[in-house]
Length: 291
Image (cartoon, rainbow, N blue to C red):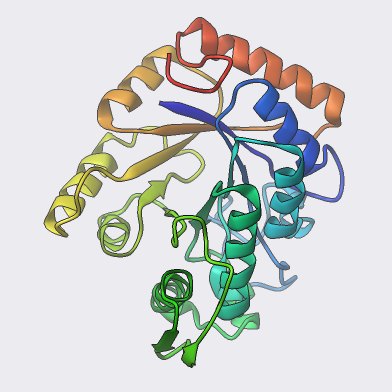
């Protein structure tokens, strides 16, 4: 099991580059950031945690661009995985987004993972021309189109939301693909979607009892004829040895911990305490590898 960090970025607190460097210094394996392009003031969509128009954190409206944030992190780190939890690909032009992600992967030496969401904020999606009832279709097309641009020397795509004729696009990602994880509630529908179109699952905040969802995902994975096992990234609040052991036995591959909305000295102190707790459970080493 690997351990990583998620920074809810904003225009205050620790900068992403400093947070990623500190996480790498303390042995963590991955560094994740979220995305919201904007938050419409008047919304029909309720936040999944609050159940209404209120937001649990004002950083939703202050979020930094994830790819700019990760680019700054790439420049000051050497090995840590650079990922999103989660990005919203359908809020971008898929051709230019494919170029951005491929460029970051190329320049970072193949360290990028795309954690993508369907988008709970359907009002936000609508401002980008994506109907809420078509968000899964749109995301599927975006991923298929971007993978074609990454994989093929001459790529083309013809869908409802994405269309382009035979095209050249370089650089390619280091492995001519980028791992894709889906961040969404672990329902049967989500698990089936992941098995068909992605490489793994990111849990949502508060999903601690995930054994049932993991079993559903494994079945969907096998039914889809996928080899190996899906990557499973669980969001955690604080380390608990019993829960981590249970998750590991059930197939969780990565666990993420959020950073406080503080400056660099406070965040570094938090990371030192967190790494110490995980090491005391024989869960993490100084290099971030399994012990």
